[in-house]
Length: 75
Image (spheres, one colour):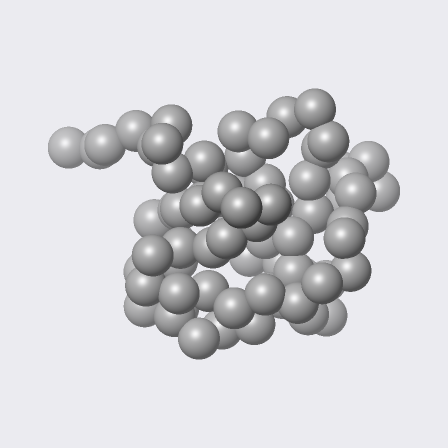
């Protein structure tokens, strides 16, 4: 249900070892480790740019990614 409330820019992107670029900003998530090269799409709330939802090209949710300069280091 949550996916119906999010916008999709209909563009396929590629995860890199540095995360994901979206609207000239970098996003990261722990689950992205080892996923470089994977094709993904992005769903987002226009006024909440601190996080995005990442899906595979078929629309299956892979996880949430957070704005890189706001990511929290975990110990």
